[in-house]
Amino acid sequence: MSITNTPFIVDRLIGFQKLVRDTIIASRDKQSMFEVSHSTAADTIYKIDTEVEPLLEEFCQEWGKVTPLILIAEGLEGPNGEECVKVFPEGTKEEDAVLRLIVDPIDGTRGIMYDKRPAWALAGVAPNKGPKTSLRDIEVAVMSELPTSKMGYADVLWAVKGQGAMAQRVNLTTGEGVPLAIGASKATTILHGFATVSNFFPGTKLLASELMEHIAKNSIGAADVTKATVFDDQYISTGGQFYELINGHDRFNADLRPTFYALQGQPEGLCCHPYDCATLLIAEEAGVLITDEKGQPLDGPLDCTTGLSWVGYANATLKKQIEPLVQGFLTSKAK
View 1 (cartoon, helix red, strand yellow):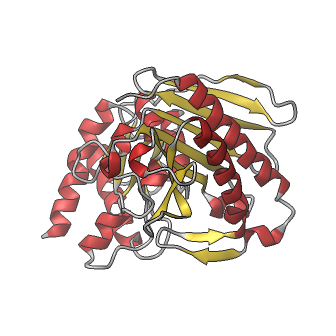
View 2: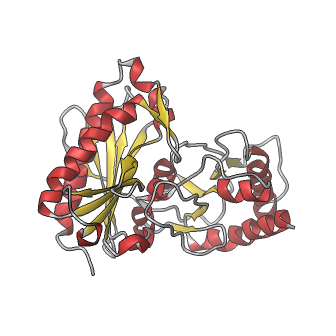
View 3: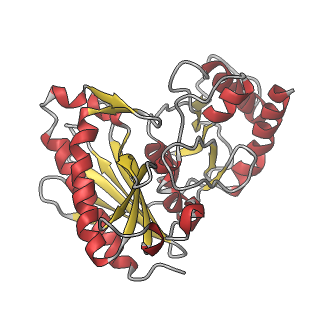
């Protein structure tokens, strides 16, 4: 089974994400919107997240009248108590739904709530293949930038499987969008480029830093501390990290927190989940190579709780250089 009428789906998702963007902009002066609301198995939920949740359900109510669908997102509960799952329209059996829609309405809340850096609205759509539907089944994906207060423009990216990635830059004053050229970096080394191992929160910082030092030393040589040879960018948003690879800004990016927790003999803590990777398709259609910790194409169930480790390379040359270093490091730490 394959998705039909993909332009209609792309337009719907762009329209919904515009609502999210407008909500973020309207809430900037409401400091209470960025207070903690509650916690789930996936992450901490801030009040701004709860402002967007009703928009998502209303959006799916309307869409579900046309095409029965299963929504996977935080804050939902299925008919049998499943977390992060809801079927639209209400009363529809899960097996009768045509699509599965996985959404992270605000990926990067911590950055946007301090007005430091844009967040991203993420969405991916797959044909409903039952509970085993995975990230690799996604055939349409859209991501929209949620701007800080000083931004006059915001980017919107989308992809249909097998048709490449597209983008536009939207003027936030006029609403006009113009085509935006995107594409992964063709650089053949990380020297004088951005390359990052996610090191967001205490708990996995030592391993993350050690891995990055290992990659730099063994790919470009011993560090010369009098020079800035490789640059680090800790963007606390998986969608944002994908964007930096898609747009040619980053050459290598990895988030290995679940693997690091396991290597340290710790329970799995806060990490990347499948709904954070809803726009994996856009990255791959733009030429980015993304694997799991074992070097296999990244995949995972469409849920909000499964921990995912991922490694992203801007091109095959960088992958050939860096992947053996990542694999060797992880193997050495597992002994």
